[in-house]
Image 1 (cartoon, helix red, strand yellow):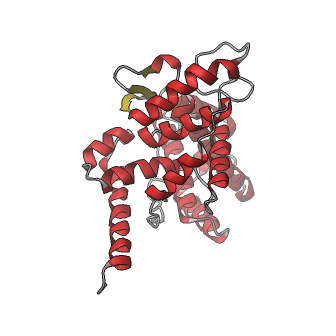
Image 2 (cartoon, helix red, strand yellow; image 1 turned 60 degrees about the vertical axis):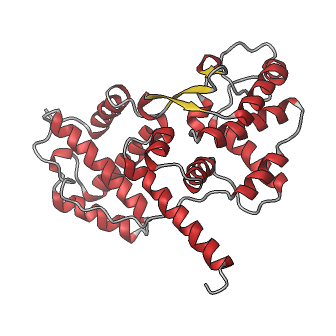
Length: 299
């Protein structure tokens, strides 16, 4: 029996939530990409996913290029649709996957942006206020730089996840995978100061176990972290706007610059594949090249 595309999409979303344990953000991206293809199906007069053929998949790819989508965006949309139709194959709704043979455009390698050590010092100076929010902000900056954790991971930290005796933190990453990360003395002191002096005052009558809270005492959300970090950037008079992931990139780059091996950095970042970590070797090589060209007398 034929099923409407929207019902199949709902089933696929449930699969991503329950079996794949994907984050809300990732699921939203899948949903947007697949809904965009459903609109294309309507334009082409295709009423049922069973009628989608390889030609239609190629035509959709052509349309994305005509609309001048970035290569990375096109690649993501094709990947989303390939996964969706693969799921329909698995559920015996379709016999073939029309997107299985569609080649994705090769994405240009973008080197991660990071802060130099002098820039990090300026950020720490700019976050050295002793007011309640100032102590919270300093603790956030110290922890993100000390551990390289994602902002989404930082937002999920509970009080019980911290072990001050061992200076370790239990982190729940992508796919709800857990890992322990280390943090140094600067982050240790900043977090303890925030907990002892400021967190309780900010909490007020709120009752929850999240480590970082907003001005009303509620759990701080990822968008709040971005706002805080941009405030610190403005105060430090640095020209570039910060993306929270820049601190993660900075963490990895500085470790490699100071002699850490790639496998250790991979484990600390929680990367499943070493290839995800290897991009930072290009960053460090670029840094070495710039330093050489700037300082060698016969460069």
